[in-house]
Length: 114
Image (cartoon, rainbow, N blue to C red; front, side, top):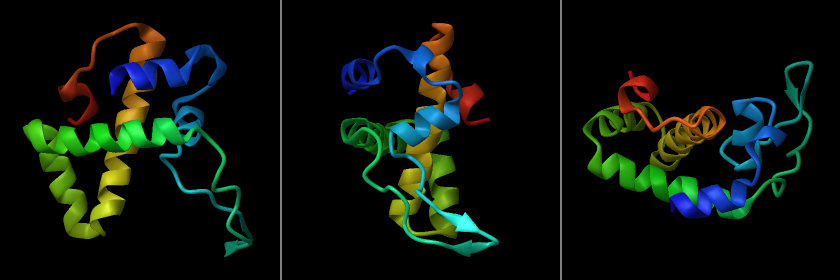
């Protein structure tokens, strides 16, 4: 999964912020809102579907094998639907991956899920 994320991302400098990277990885909702009203569905097919798959798989396995990530996932799952909780976890992992690739650091669970 890590190799898929690395190869599908390409050069990380083309994304100015973690939010842009998470949007490219389809880890956030596509919304068109004007005057606090929804004005359509937006471009839901925009981004990389393989990154979406990879981060959803990473979220699934991280929730199983890492206790701190599982605790975060269980908290989210009590407040919303299971798939929404997994998508939130995938978004958090995508943002952490952005910082890892940008700075060349290893993943730190305590920093990402403190």
